[in-house]
Image (tube, rainbow over all chains, first blue to last red; front, side, top):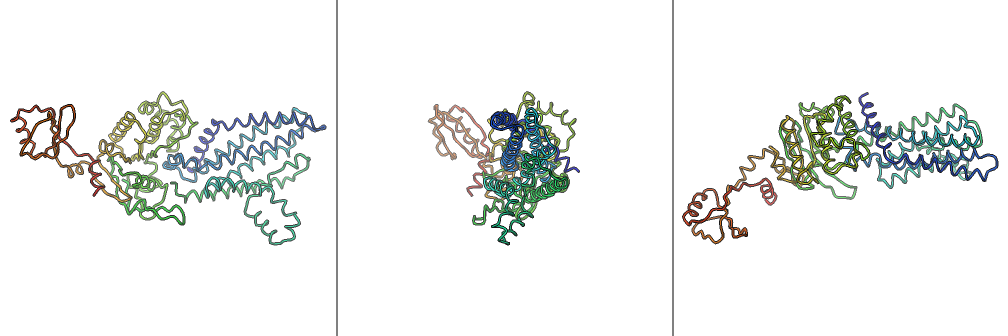
Length: 258
Length: 302
């Protein structure tokens, strides 16, 4: 209980610090970008400018979340070590685990706020073009938030294991492969080679499957997504993210902070 | 209060790099109520010792013992310790007031108590004018002062400062030293590392000296000075005086028509009589005391 209280204090001030940095300006820039691109693209579409707006909006908020998550996540603990602020915190009655959870909670709240604001811009643009927002579109936006938090836990775990460059490359690699892996099962080359199929299966078991959070195609082609699929994805996110944070906490607890 | 017991720390950058012994079987302690200076050149092992005590890094062998005054265990001890790391950069976008609240809350203080303490403490550390400014606008001295403020805010029993005076101008150093003395007089134990011997000599009653990861001295400052004291007197006289048959240790031309003679204590009176006999004008006379720095230089050279 005490650990969670301390984590919340760290989270509150981390969020406050991030809010005052200029990162949130990206919402204004991207919001303007979405509106402008939609206006231009609408000129070249025939009767579906609202879908173009939705496509651009969902794409922008996903890319924005990737950029911000990688940028912040890679430095989240390392920067605290380099600036020695971590010493100020953990020399008080604050455990390393509380510190880690607090930092991740603060950044996650910021990421959610960032994505929420961008989602609002997207919804506003779509509605102003006479379109409507389906519940699946809202689910897609919610899944983008979950994906950003999972990516954050991946990049933080990697940053505790390797240097900045390797951790960043690893996170980008996992992000790309994590989106493409689902398609590889249907490739004939993989199907004809059982060992390769097993590797892909193993990947599914161990490494992050980011493709689960990508609902853009379903939204744009107005398809359905079963409720149990949404629930399954949510629990996948919950267990995977909790597992990764636990691994990071284990590493941080054993790490020499020098 | 806090004891390093046979502590060794060996660093190895990677598998192929040679091992480096930062601390070599070092044992020393900080008595309650003392003001202890932690001396040693850069790389002597001071910061490594502090990091081990605060559990930032683990020793290769040995341990750190937290006394009953600190609660007896690391978990309890951190409630009673205030630590200021060497030149931290803090959170640039937080205001001074927010940063103090942040650190106070982490130390387990209630918000109301923190808010009551902020103004008097900010006045004490001459930061009251800057509490509502972001930390990125603070000068180096101000950052050091706010760091010190948050270190003592929760009234810890033991205050550990890592190079608190480094990077400060003479005025800033004087201010910091005055505050350290003041806090010590309030009954707190202060332990600070420095590579500047004169600072330690000025304010500390005990000193711990490390060299290449080994303990060279642990004890009070005064006996160290007395034991190593070669009592001498320095006479300042006009140039041209001749003292035949008197043993003085050295003679130095000072410029402006003056010379100084350094004479051992047992020859001081004889030297005064010679000056009077020769009708020489005595410009100055002072007892030369050895400084801690000289003693440590001697130790190092030996």
